[in-house]
Length: 278
Image 1 (cartoon, rainbow, N blue to C red):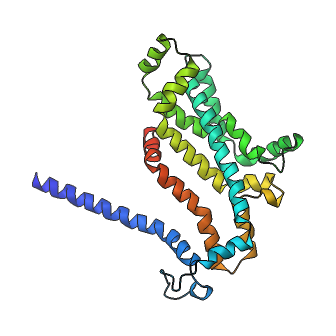
Image 2: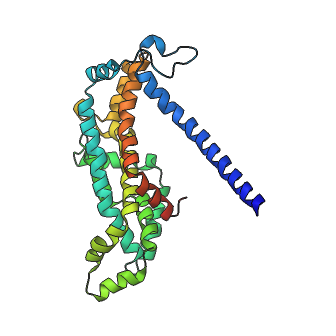
Image 3: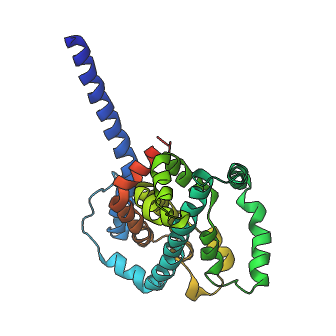
């Protein structure tokens, strides 16, 4: 028995050591980016590398603000990153609930069709979608980047369905017996119980749209509508050798994603594990 306890403790210590090592390996690029963003140009490529900047140059960040309209890009990026969250949290639970818990014959046929859309590459639909939006006069607006999210995306519908299926049918049947309609059940029972997966969907949508470059670069033509991904790409071409400024811009681009994840990490991890992805 003692041998087994010793082996168990040794296994836990080994697992902890491996996790710490992997975490450090993944954190090194982020730490190096932040460190470089605070250096003077001459210290960027020192050998051996200088992990702690000396001297510390916070002026690098102010220089980035002077070179590109960062506040404007932040505002535009928030529009195309936050509004899709609202759209997905409105549409995905509704579709997922209808195919998971509402007793109608079409549910078992609709859901495979929804999943089938995940197999169509984005490159296949890119030109037809652009032609459609251009015909309606929505090119150079945020509409093509925001509106489709109010009709659901297969991946987020799938995540919601996996979670909703685990909700006991007896709870929903009791609400129906009490006279509640499907819409009331959705918003008063399903939504509160789905908080972990709703947080997961919100974070995934935010990260996807915050990092998106293809959509904005196709539909946005006016520089006043540029988002951070386009602004960072433009700045990369303008400041090719100014690595301290490039890292400062990249740090400001990445910071909201890190903050968003740390705010919702508990719900995010719970949502991922309860939908079958471990």
